[in-house]
Image 1 (cartoon, rainbow, N blue to C red):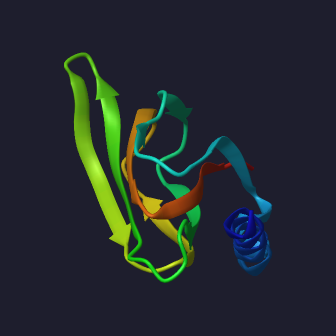
Image 2: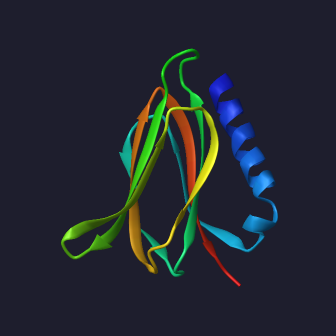
Length: 123
C-alpha cells in the first residue's frame, strides 16, 4: 500500500512540476501496473507527443527496473519507434517525435509499481 501512495504522490508531483507544459496536453491513455504488459493501440494525431511516468519500488531496498519500447502499429505488426528505461524510482518523461498514427507500448517492469500516460498537444 505504501508503494501505491508513493506512486500517486510522485505522479501528482510530476504533473504539477510540468505545470504549463501540460496545460495544453490531453491524456490519450493511462496505464498502471506491477508486471510487464503490452498496451492496446492508441491514436496519436500530432507530430510530437509526450510520455509521462512514475515508478516506485514494489519491495523496498530491492533492485528496480522499468523500461518501455514504443511501437507504431503497422499492417505487419509493429515498427520500432523509441525506447527508454530507468533503474531509479521517481517520475520521468520522454518526447516521441514520430508523427501521427496508431501506437502501442511494450512495458517491462521488475520490482516496480508504475503509472504511465501518453499525452498529445491540443490547441
